[in-house]
Image (cartoon, rainbow, N blue to C red; front, top):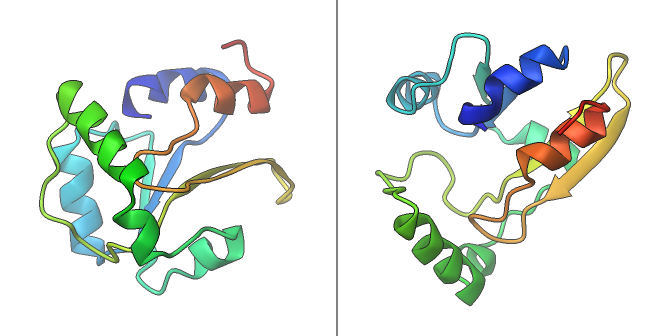
Amino acid sequence: MRPHAGEFEKAGATLAVIGNGLPAMAKSWARHNDFPSTVAVLTDPGRKSYDAAGLKRSFAATLSPTSAVNFVRAVRRGFRQGRILGDAWQQGGALVVRPGGEVVFRHVSSAPGDHASASTLLAALGAPA
């Protein structure tokens, strides 16, 4: 999402990234990935936000054939996985939440590398993609 942070800001949205490691890990990760200061980088070591969003935690999903294919695709695109911080079995996802707490879009990742696209999230906001 980092390359699209300005698009979210232009659409009037606050982009937030929530990890499950310790606060120092989140800070280091944000710095390493060069996230702009307009992006809220948060952490939830107890994974309560993941549970509330209905996101999966799965050993099998993390080590599935799909995750292996996604890993190879990411490496070909130049991504290099660093040291795993936080809960390695916790899968991610994406929510678009309107003021007042209404969830208008939810993507539950089925494996590492299964992400909603920025254009999909922007469309859920009602922003031009």
